[in-house]
Length: 144
Image (cartoon, rainbow, N blue to C red; front, side, top):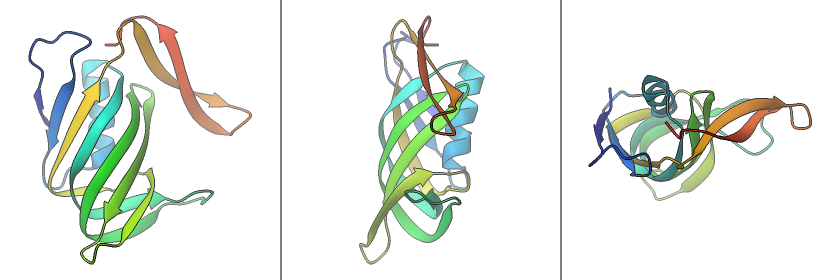
């Protein structure tokens, strides 16, 4: 379970989460969104992973990358309808790789995630026949 910090609870204040060893990066963020009935833009994400499950461009399935890995960057959106996340990781030799974050990215030591809600906008995902993927939707409403 993630630790969280929000100074006032205002809908436009960032939410900072700390994920713990063994947490699944993607599933933890999606669970937090469901728990809070909230949607966010990811501002920052850093930490360490034991395993990264990344889907590379145009690939049909994720590829497992064995750790130890440093999570250098995490970007995307999270809503109650799911997440769209991309990550950049570095291995112990400094080799860098990036792709679409899938379930199975396991936190090694910690992951520090900063999220920002959008005032007056609710994010979601809906299947787009043109792409064949659940794509981002935005509508007026509470960001929470």
